[in-house]
Every structure is written in C-alpha cells, then in structure tokens.
Length: 155
Image (cartoon, rainbow, N blue to C red):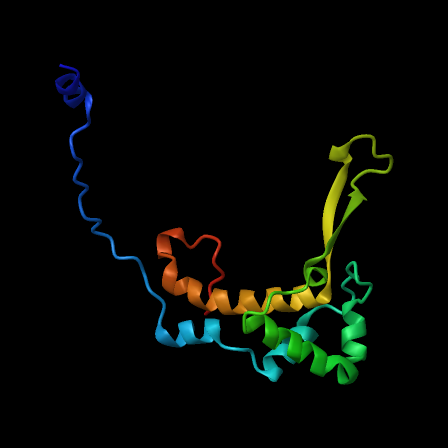
C-alpha cells in the first residue's frame, strides 16, 4: 500500500523539448585573437593610450611614470602581459585597488554625500584594456542587433 501511494505522488518523467535556438559563434579569427599573446606593439600602444594624468594606484606608480620610464620598464611589462595571457596567475598586487571617497558637496555629512572611485595599478589597467579591446571585437558577432544598446558601434 505504501508503495502504490508513493507512485501516485511521483512526478511523471518530464521530456524537455529540444532548444531550437542556435547560439551565435565567433569566427575562428576572433577566437584565435582572444587567445593569442599580444604583440609588443599592442602592449606599448595600450600603455601609451592610458592618460598621463591617471592617478597612481596602490603601488604608487602613475601612468606618467610608465610613459616617462618606458625604455627601462618595457621588457618587464611585456613579460608580465605575456605571462598573464599564457595563463600564469597574476600576483595579488596587480589587482590591488584603493577606494577613495570624493565629496560631492562642500560639507559632507552622510555616505550619500560622497562618490567612490577606484584607484587601480597601471598594470591592471593595461591588462584590462587589452582584454576589453579583444572582447569588444567579438561582441558584434555574439550580441543580436536588438540587444546591442550598450555595444559601441564601429562604422
């Protein structure tokens, strides 16, 4: 009796329909670009595309330092970027960020009177910008036109 009762309350086997939608795929060229190690030219261009007036992160080195000392530090930056794109875990110091509260009003009284900003190390900015450039090339192939409101259009 208990066995027959249990069968009455079991859900029938559900058969899910096949999903008729084909997810978009990126081209082989863009896929290869996403996984490739950036060239020294790409890395240097990325470094110099960061505003010189960008404030230093927790490591104390501003982007103007990277610009001014590029001939001395270039090899280290190339190696760090290559290591990252080869799968080597980044040291925690690369992703260290300092949160600074900027007052919105003359005499701030509450947390709402401040605007938080994040100060990141330039190495983190370099890696983020390289990744952004690569991913942004793939987005038009992955996002449908009806969902592309926040995708920068290239004309």
